[in-house]
Amino acid sequence: MVYTGKVIKYGDNVDTDVIIPARYLNTSDHAELASHCMEDLDKDFTKRVSKGDIMVAGDNFGCGSSREHAPIAIKASGISLVIANTFARIFYRNSINIGLAILECPEAVANISDGDTVEADLDNGIIYNRTTGKEFKTQPFPAFIQKIIENGGLIETIKKGELK
Amino acid sequence: MSMTMTQKILAAHAGLDKVEAGQLILVNLDRVLGNDITSPVAIKEFNKIGVDGVYDKEKVTMVMDHFAPNKDIKAAVQCKMCREFCNDKEITHFYDVGRMGIEHALLPEKGLVVSGDVVIGADSHTCTYGALGAFSTGVGSTDMACGMATGKAWFKVPSAIKFILKGKLNKYVSGKDVILHIIGKIGVDGALYRSMEFCGEGVSSLTIYDRLTICNMAIEAGAKNGIFPVDEQTVAYIKERSDREIVAYEADEDAKYDEVYEIDLSEIKSTVAFPHLPENTKTFDEIGDIAIDQVVIGSCTNGQYKDIEEAAMILKGRKVAKNVRTIIIPATQDIYLKAIENGLVKIFIEAGCVVSTPTCGPCLGGYMGILAAGERAVATTNRNFVGRMGDVTSEVYLASPAVAAASAIAGKIADPAKI
Image (cartoon, rainbow over all chains, first blue to last red; front, side, top):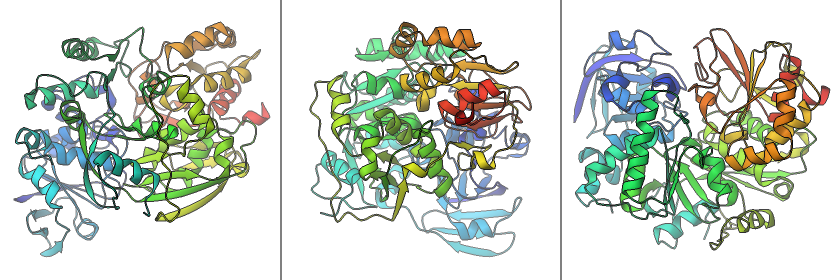
């Protein structure tokens, strides 16, 4: 799977309260959640995001609450992939479970700027910054997690009887 | 065997003799928890799986606590969805308004978690039950859905950080100060993906309630779980509430830890986390005059009877400062009733506080105490992120019940030892 998109970049410790504030958790509608995505950190996010864009961030992305509404809002807003130095653990597993592509690669994060165009090849673990011409290698996911992502999430994996 | 306490519990629940950090395993679950915010998403996912019922009607648990009693029509719809699901699936442990409390105070109180259990909850503060020697951790709604259907969850076995505790806490210093001190030291991602294992002779001086508060905020250091060894206090607490067998796991003597910290409890001072991260901690020698508009005493972190009582003892016979709205939220119905019977509610009302039915409400900016632009609150809650309790320019200062009560009286962030 190869993702190509324009980068929207944020800093460290982007928490789930700014990704989707709790005042909007009285719904689980994906489009409605997406309409408030990143609102308390970047009120222009919903205006500037386009389908396929790639979100890039620093350390501990998605820290805080376990709300799956956070990766759902990001995915439903059109973001195809999140690249960060590190992810908070619940956000990490939620993203895998709902099929939002994520990659950890501090070297890439340090060399990607807001507005760059980036290509990411998940199968081979390669991130290419088209704007600067630089390429970075990441660790591919273990087979167990690859299988969940390939199946389109945890629910599909269970339906196929492949959670073993 | 070289396993940490956490690894031993996980190995036993995966049917393995040994596990190692980094290994991916499938684990059998003793309890699967959700609340009124995360369960609706889980129910939608559960319905896609195509199974008739949940894996165990006794083990699936739902608590209506975040926006309940319903804060608005949308919240009412979400609670209704949970209620109908639980009725339809004949789920025993469904806690609605009148029976509910804040989930992480309620489950230990009702004896729904015992030492040695593996618990997942679609709420990040599910890590609280490590205080009872259980492995418990927060997950998302899809994990909850799969847990409800299959009784299993996937985990990457964590490595651990060891915290050796010694000494005893001073007056007005409690579990909240211990965990804020630790987060200030290691940072909000200091324990990322890892276990925080507490041990040492200092453990016995900490009450179960101190331990619950400490484990509750392990997630605020990024940890997968926090866990305490099982001792006489743990056994006494559980035996009053459950007939289930207590399984006390112990870390192997040669267990490997990524890092080891020694913490002298007698050196910990009252600690406050400044906006907008729980790691921004200060002690009173570094805190100037910071005027406040609101105090919240409650939440899954500090809504236990002991917490409410500590605040009441400071507020007794005093008045809260003019213009400081002071909101007291006992975490469960039992705690609320005990606070009424023992005269604590009278103390609060006479001091000018308001006392609410159990709810998570203000902690996450839901309702029951939202902050306007530029307002400041001292709260015994767990997060002080941007916009957490209201407007994006409002500020939350995290502190113990003693500091919160003293601050309500002083009208500014105040040291309980000096009130």
